[in-house]
Length: 216
Image (tube, rainbow, N blue to C red; front, side, top):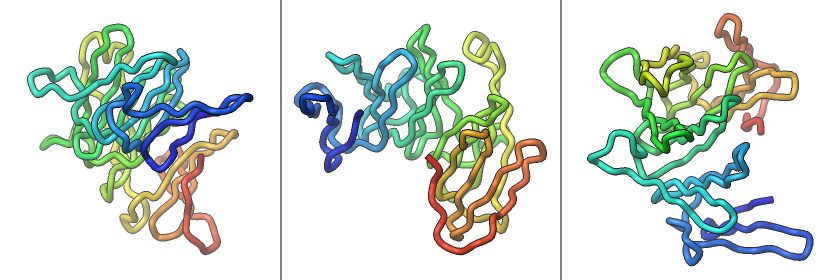
């Protein structure tokens, strides 16, 4: 089990105690925004200055290289997600989302741009997977994007298909997730919880008051 302590270290609890891992052990930055363990056992850590991959012994740190468009698009990574095909998605503070190809160690960027093919915003608030394998991304105050990747996305660098959505009354997204029955839930900043109908891209508000929260 991995937890954050005061945003300065990772702590792994074991039966006999715990071990704290910080910048002294190679973590790139003490401000940690998200942690995820992938299917291969690696621990991914999103920080204010770099994306970290921990193998239990050492850190590999991914950062932005302005001369390499296959590097991380921004050093400030906020959200992490691994999809059903083992692709690592890293959402950034101001530079869209990155998809990591484990076979070649490169990142493929999807960002907001002047064309309709881009994301609705570059500040990423949440990433999850729909039951049909498409990826749902929440952007800061800009709504939701459904991203569809082709089977040859990495090999041919093909343009993803992006469908832009908005909650009723253009409400900003507070949190989102999928339950054990594959129902998709979206929490709005209006205090409402919405069930997302994947078949027709509609939102059904649930009755009741109170602040909505993200579904784990």
